[in-house]
Length: 179
Image 1 (cartoon, rainbow, N blue to C red):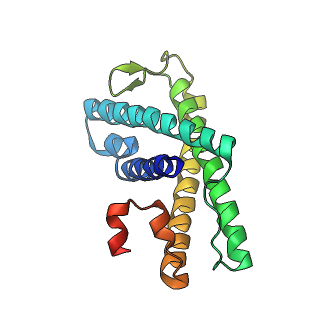
Image 2 (cartoon, rainbow, N blue to C red):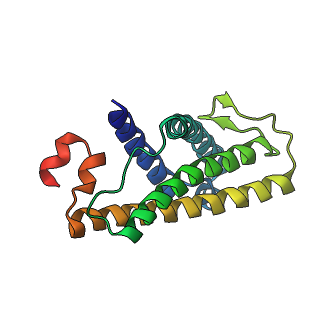
Image 3 (cartoon, helix red, strand yellow):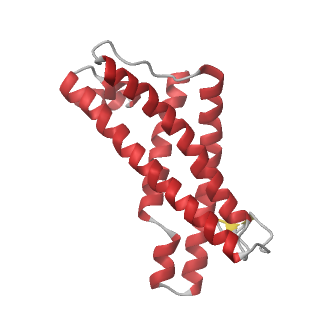
């Protein structure tokens, strides 16, 4: 059951990461009207709240049970260290990115409404503090993206070069015949 929950968290989290890579409020600001800016920020904030819930569940399972994955027997000693520390880095990077995004929303000098409905702040923040928090959030997101790419590359290396079926661990059973 735990593995099934982690698979869902893993793939839904990956979907959110793709969403944030594709849709960014700054992109809307550069090329759209103020209504589009507001919509982009509202969607970003709303999806951020959903991701925060997902990260909280994931984080609690990590604190309660530790890392779910164990390095496979085919992994060389250095790769076992990379496996352990890479997963731990992801577990820390996710909440740091979420907290920095939440802080950015809280200190914004304008109202932030998740999905255009859920009030996430009072709208009386300071622009300088908001700019600093936004910069920290963007750096945290970039670091998380790099960690995710390294994570994907590591597990592709394990699966295809070491041939230890690493992808089957987190892939739905329906996809196993192609792995």
